[in-house]
Image (tube, rainbow, N blue to C red; front, side):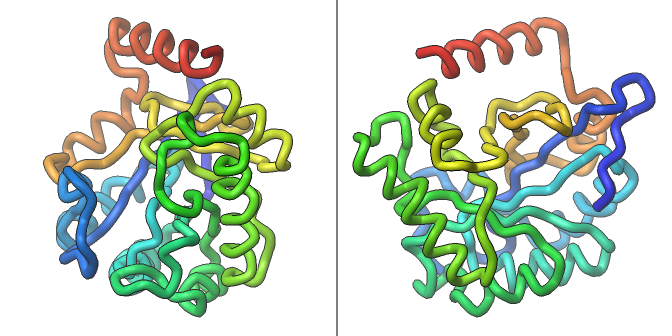
Length: 230
C-alpha cells in the first residue's frame, strides 16, 4: 500500500492495529474477544481504508486467521499489511505455522515480531527482554525466510528501558498502541487499536481526523511522554 499523507500534513499517517478475524481457533486471553472482528466487518473496514492512502494496516498476534481470512481479504482490496507474530505460538493450534509466515512474505506482506510470549515488556527483566526482542525475532526470521526489522509492543507496554533495548538490538521501527497519527519517517509508531465495536464510519472519521479533539491530543501526548521517560 503506497502511503501518502494528507495535503496539509504530507508526512503524517494513521496506523491501524487489527487482531483476529472470524472465529478464534484457540483459547483467548481475558478481554481479547473485544478485538476480534467479523469477516464481513473486516471487508467493510478495508473498503474504507482503501480510500485513504495515508492509512497503514498492521495485524498483531499471528493468529491463523491472518492467513485464512486477513490475507485473502487484503489481496481482494489490493492492500498490504504488516503482520506482527508471537514466536512462541508458531505452529500452535489457532496460530500461524512457520510455512504460513513464509507465505505472508511471499505474498508481499511485511512480517515483524510481537515478542515471544505476549507478556508486558515493561515488567520484563534484562534476560526476559532480550528473549522477547532478540530470540523472538530470530525465530520469526527463520520462519519468514528473511530478517525481522520491526517490532510491536504487546499490550502497548513500554518505557525508556524497552525503547533503548529495541534501538540497541537494531530494530528499524517499533509500534505501540498509543493512538493518534504518526510521522511516516518516525522510529516510534503509535497505532489505533481496532475493536469489535468499531464501525466503518468510526474508521473513516479517524482517517479524516487522526488527531481527534485537542483534549484527546493533549492527553495522548502526555501519556506517551511519561512512557518514554519513566
